[in-house]
Each structure stands twice: as C-alpha cells, then as structure tokens.
Image (tube, helix red, strand yellow):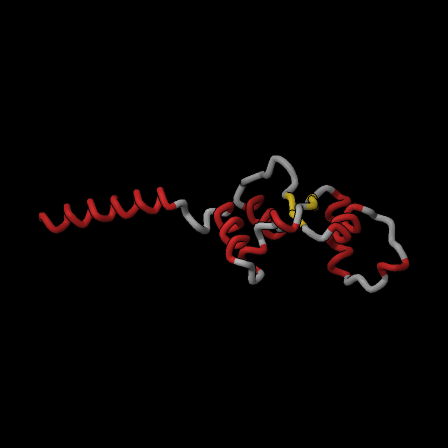
Length: 117
C-alpha cells in the first residue's frame, strides 16, 4: 500500500487522506493502533512494527471489517459458493445477469452489422 502511495505521489497524484487497509483480525487491528509494546508481542516480526509505525505516523490507517465482508477473501481463500458470489459481486468480479444480457445483445448487433458488410 505504501509503495502504491509513493508511486502515485511520483506521478503527481496526491491522496486526500491516508489509505485504509481493512483487516478482519481484531487482534491485529488493535495491535497496529496501540503503540505500547507488550511482553506478549515479542514474537512479532519487524515488518509488523514497521506497519505500526506507519499507522502511528498517519501514513496508513487500519480499520476492522467483519470477516463476512472481507472482499480480499474472494481472491485469497477457497470459499463456499454463496459467500464467494456475494463478495465477488461487491468487487464486480461477477456481473449481474441483466448486464451480461445487454453485452450479449451488443455483441449480436455488432456481429449482424459485420455480416452485412
């Protein structure tokens, strides 16, 4: 996320506010927001501390999202079909049948025009 923010900045595009990372792990969300180091957190990797520093400095935000609404799961986990369909629709990975029907009509019209010429 930080790399993408840096790339946009180099292209002259400034983000109006820090990007938000949606996390369905409540413990990770709380740890990223709490700058206090607990003895139970000794096992955390250096990368996690980097993320926590970025949150503390206001470069990024971490926001909790319910696991049922985590759209990243669509591309990262095997899901039951109903949940996959619901999440995939939210990111427009699956189009509504009415949209698909319109596209088929457009293709048929274009094919008819080509066959006449």
